[in-house]
Image 1 (cartoon, rainbow, N blue to C red):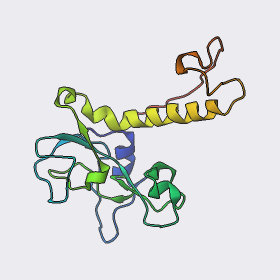
Image 2: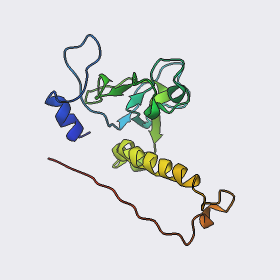
Image 3: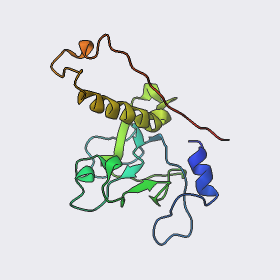
Length: 165
């Protein structure tokens, strides 16, 4: 685990909200950990697995279709929680307990870079959304084989990343 710009803002009390009833906040919203114990209801994860835990957990509103379908990044209510960011302690502690629903197993061969899984999901989500938007455009034939969709067309990709230390 490392401390990023978000964590720095949280520790400076510029950003972040501790869980209800706490006057402190454990930071850390990205993690890779080794599973040392599982509960009796856990089926897909076992002791010894490496796992990345999702930062954002769904809200509890029954009518939030995004959260009810596992798309809590599109939560309609804003009542989601985020480890180390919004109303849920972060991962910068000796032990982390979370629901199997929010854990993703990482192969041991990726131990040295597995912590990058969560930030990479942000890029993957952006690409997925861009592709979804592209599918609606009239010049993309959804019935064409994937390798031919958009063949011969040009694109301009514009973006900005700001990093402060």
